[in-house]
Structure formats: structure tokens, C-alpha cells
Amino acid sequence: MNNRKGLRDILEKFRSGELGLDDALQSLAEFHYLDLGCAKLDTHREFRVGYPEVIFSQGKTAQQVVTIMKAMLERGSNILATRAGKEQFEAVREFCPEAVFNPVAGTITVKKSHAPQPETYIAVVTAGTSDLPVAEEAAVTAELFDNRVERVVDVGVAGIHRLFDNLGVIRGARVVIAVAGMEGALPGIIGGLVDKPVIAVPTSIGYGASFHGLAALLTMLNSCASGVCVVNIDNGYGAGYAASIINRL
Image 1 (cartoon, rainbow, N blue to C red):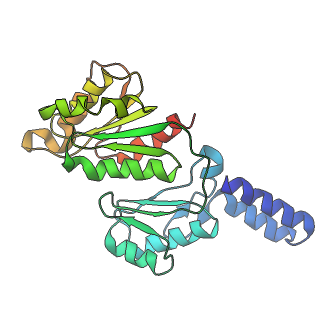
Image 2 (cartoon, helix red, strand yellow):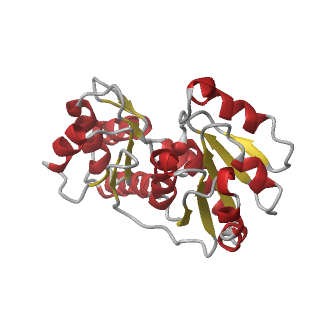
Image 3 (cartoon, rainbow, N blue to C red):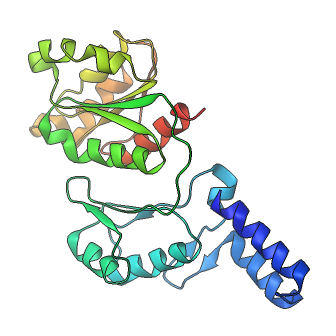
């Protein structure tokens, strides 16, 4: 992992005399977290849990995102910024041309290192096309963490034959992310058809009585299918992160 390499580099530089005691202690202090003024970057997170900190961009200015991202790039981290807009991306691209913006997912990614990819894959399944932004956030997250992702789009219960036509891909996955708004029935149906864990993601898509995703959330929490777990409304990132952990066990 990048942070383990960073710790080894500090120790080796100290042993060789390239770093004095004061500089080595300062580097070790910054190894845990770095105070950037607008944020305290958790530089120890990758060492602690296996994945680097992710930037939640909503509510942050473009300059704040740039400040955080520059500090992460200096440490060689892979970068994922979620809920990002075009203005933030344009500011990032000025100093990091290799940054990639996914306008559907609202993500900015920079890939600096690769881990071995598991032979297994994650299936990301959406009930409707309107659920794609949340589903893409999950897929981009999983892909940044070196997982193969298979996407199955628009197979909701209003035309359930579409789901049956794609069961081969879904059943072949090690873990399934099922994304649905409206009444949120899709994850429960998938849970009754596969022998793999299903991560249900309610979205805020739907008419008035869907209560901005609350109806879908409650349906998923009350699913009678075993093996279904639920993340928060519109939390594609959380689903992609959890699926990556499962796929890489």
C-alpha cells in the first residue's frame, strides 16, 4: 500500500542520514493526518483500513477540493472525489491533466497505482435509467479499488422479464449492488434469486409518496429475502466500497 511504502521511505531516509531527527518526527506526525486549514487529511487511513480517504465534494469550493487533492497526490494516493461538479473538475484539471470526470456519477478520479484485480466481479444492477447516477457512483468507486464491474441497466419490476434475461451476469458476480427508487422492490427480488450478498441502494427517484427515497429505503429494510443489506439513500459510494471489501476478501 502507498502508506506502508511512505512509512518505509521515512525510516530509510532517517537511517541513511538523509532526514534529521526533527524532520523525521515531522514526517511521522504528518503520516497520521495533515492539517490543510480547510481540512485535516487522514493520511493514515490507507494504512489502517486498506483504502485512502475519499473526497466528498458537495459543499466544498473548487479551491478546497484542489487543496485536498494536491496533498493526496504528493503522497501517491489514488483519488476519488464524489458529488463533484464541472467547476471543481476544471480547477483540478489545471494541475492534474490525468484526472477523469464522470458526469453521470459526479466523480473525479486519479489512478496512480494498481492492485491485483480479483478474478471475481461485482454486478451493479439498476431498476431504471434514472437510477444511473447513483449506480455509476458505486461502479466508479469499485473500479477505482481495482474491481471488475459488470453493469446491468433498467431491469426493474415494471418489466421483470428484463431481469430474468440478465440473470446469468447477475448470478455470476461475487456480490451484487442493486439500485432502485420508486417502491424499491428490485433488491428483494434479486435476493431471492441469487446465492450472493446483495447490497441494496435506495435512490431518491420517484413521485411524491416515495418521499425522496424513504419509501424505497423502508421496502429494502423490510425485505423478506435473506442476504440483503441496505445502505443509505443515494449512497452509491458506500455500496461500492462495501462491495469492494467483499469482492477482495
